[in-house]
Length: 165
Image (tube, rainbow, N blue to C red; front, side, top):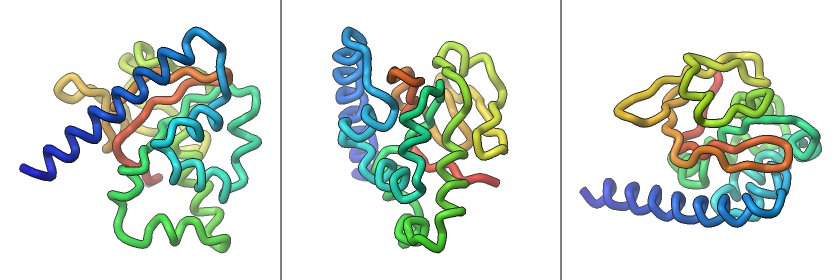
């Protein structure tokens, strides 16, 4: 019960933060995907991973990109040691594969995502998309905040890290 309360509270806080952040960004255009993620505060692990994988310049590029962005809580839910292992220089190829599995070429807003069954990622594999009890699910992750716009694409916040098959 307590874990469920913590998860619900975390989702609520993330939703409120993103709603305020997305609303503020809507009127002044906008920062790129990396800057939006870095300034939010809920993506410290994701931003560190993007830096370790040398993907900053790519994700600051013209795009457009659709990024499925796991929160820090999503990374924390991985088995112990997974993040540290991925961030080691000798595992850069694995890290790049995981991160590019979270990026879909093009700007796909939530209304379009809901019409899809799958989408091919930059990594090359497809993520599966489904609607489950009114929630958009991408593989095993729930979209907890859709349509956070950036100058070079859109971020959909997810509650789990996607791992390529």
